[in-house]
Length: 174
Image 1 (cartoon, one colour):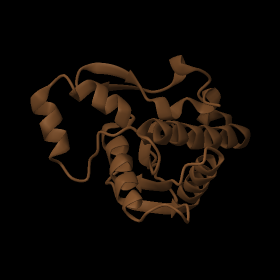
Image 2 (cartoon, one colour):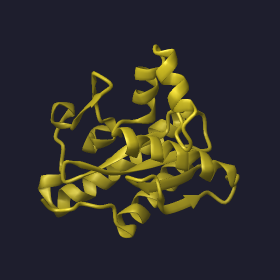
Image 3 (tube, one colour):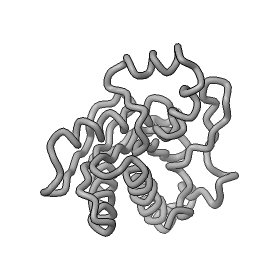
Image 4 (tube, one colour):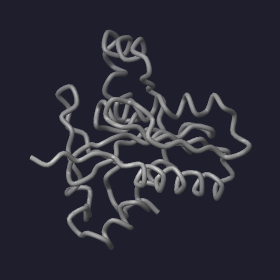
């Protein structure tokens, strides 16, 4: 089995795309790409974004990498289970705020992207847009990285519930 890992080059491309999408939406965003262990690989923030936004973005990225699902999907699963919800909240550096999305490479989760700085719904959208840009670029370089529809996106069996890994939709986010 080949080891697939997030590289600094990939991570840097993704955080730059995220900051660009934030600026287009007038969001002073911070972006963090982390590896599977939650360690930052690349970070960036708009000059106007506060430094605490990097911490929040890192937590969202770690959540997505750890669970292989968006932080929004994680919240949707745990919100109805008080014990599970409390457990996730009590586990640093995880965050249940939307804005985190898994990074999928060659069909495997290799890390997470976290965005913080806007309303959490904006953060979530920016994360998906940045990953959509990245997957579009990969599609041109190597078609095996493309997910043609939600049906092709990886599924995550997250605590007994199947969720589509929304960060892997490829070009479906505009």
